[in-house]
Image 1 (tube, helix red, strand yellow):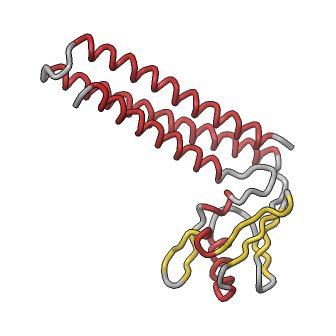
Image 2 (image 1 turned 45 degrees about the horizontal axis):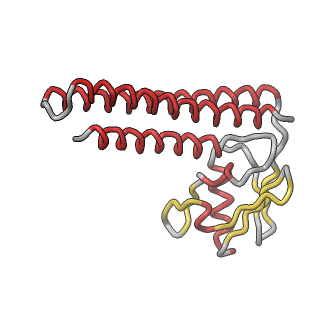
Length: 186
């Protein structure tokens, strides 16, 4: 592998780690209704677990309410069961056509739990990024031993991978800080 290939592989994998963090943070509850609260939810429909966004549209018409409108009204009970079985802590209210989820304001204790969860997710992402850095450095060392990279090229590559690691860790930190302030906002 060339130095450029090693660098690009590390960059691509670090980007994926940050994208996963974004997705995970999107599902964390804040003080307002957010369709992301149920976007990862899977409901048992037509005999298989299906993401809710494939069987219904989810909107937030008010700051404290989500409305789930199934594409097929006959599956409304299945969606309700899926919401009740999930751990999002919201009770569905159905009128036969749409499901309404009232999102209560967060208590101080729940907010602290959500903030600590965001920190856990950020740390997981940073650990993944550091593992990718380690893999890139190992590959660079192996290529240098096989004489496909010179020592100078290997050292430059390691420096570039370290800069890349810092860049993606900063992105993870910024995403986490933004989500924490959103959670703590009253």
